[in-house]
Length: 369
Image 1 (cartoon, one colour):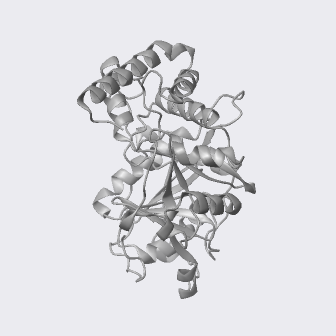
Image 2: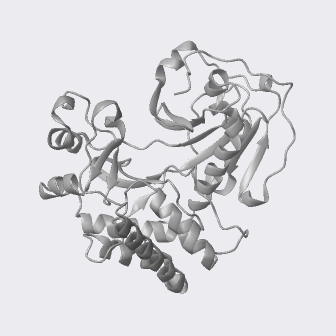
């Protein structure tokens, strides 16, 4: 985890002038006036409102006053965080399921991206105007929406030494009554005094996961098929068949509407921001995803059989394994066709055939779950 307890001074001689990337046609690129022009009252007490939600090799995610901020560890990888922001921003236009689907996976709403080295802020102007996010700091000089957005990043400008940040919706935790049952039923005995889980990874491609030793993490707890069945049987969670169908539909839409390979994304169970008593399913973490090699084009056949298939198997075991007779794979496959849509049905068939063939090869080698 990158330390954030000590503030860092901002270096540099002021903002540079940049232009919007062609891939961000819906976004506004803001270069503010010098930082002294934005006067925001940030006191040391604000540091106590900052808590870490999770940390990986690439970035850490912090909760500040109910919003989430993802901060890259290495400023040399700022461009990768920007790419993640752009991918997630592009997917905001799509609902990851058809209207008829009773259950679907949500995407966290993204608000803005900030790179302190270039003093650049990206955000979607149209969506921002229609759903204006709250200012987390009040600025005495934020007379424009541009400066108002910059004022939100003030605390992180103090704490970070050049690392890029983006601001997004904070996922509500798994409802507490359900989280307590997960702890009681699923935690190994030595860990049942640990806090209840806040987010659960939905591992429908694995029968049994044993989170033991130093890898135990209640903030991102793995909920495999067997554990899910137990909780479903107690009427705490939706039927697994509905969840995997929605998962397949979400992946189909990410592939064919969002033109995104979904590499290393996470399918998780969390809470409902409008109702703290209901669980909801989410798709998060787009920092390793890619788009087709040809801009504004769909996936070519060789990319389907290579990039999309590699991404499918590189992910954690969220998806049911693509075998004949595998529990839940039929529902996942049906959902994937729905998500891909009629015009992409042939390409969806090519993808599904390719992952089934790859699974057969792995099973023959004895190298899969």
